[in-house]
Length: 229
Image (tube, rainbow, N blue to C red; front, side):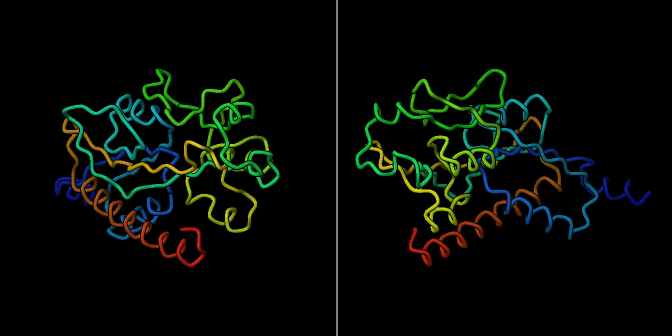
């Protein structure tokens, strides 16, 4: 009876989120912790995908929210911008590419590129940051990719928030690519008008936006103190 009364107050029974693995999990987990403190009766399910796999699963499972690096927009999508995330082109300090200045695309393509496998069966979104060489290792997540980079298996893009310590210690170094070794993207928190959010979805949206802003401010302070920013 208690649950029935809570659901009648507008709390949906279940809330499903699909998250791109390139995004920081810390603000998401903090938002969920704050959600729990509200004693919301809604069951929450988190799923992690990569690139086009986020939108594929969002649509396949009729999920409520997706936190996505990029997606194919449509009239029913309702996006909210999250703070910008920067990725850096890096390799191990022992990798030959980090000893070269003004690395050309041809030089890059002579080495193994480490990248993340798109988890969508349709490959909805092409990863425009790949370098087009023949030597490519596709990995299933950023923890595996980070370990592969540290072992010197190849070079690749990594979100800056995941490698701050390794950059500071010198275990990973930037690759001085002529086309640039940094790029930024603005992730989006997306719902759809076809599946309007209930009270739990609206509250979680507010908490996620708030925690990502806090995370960005904290990261900026840390980068300034280490001289990496």
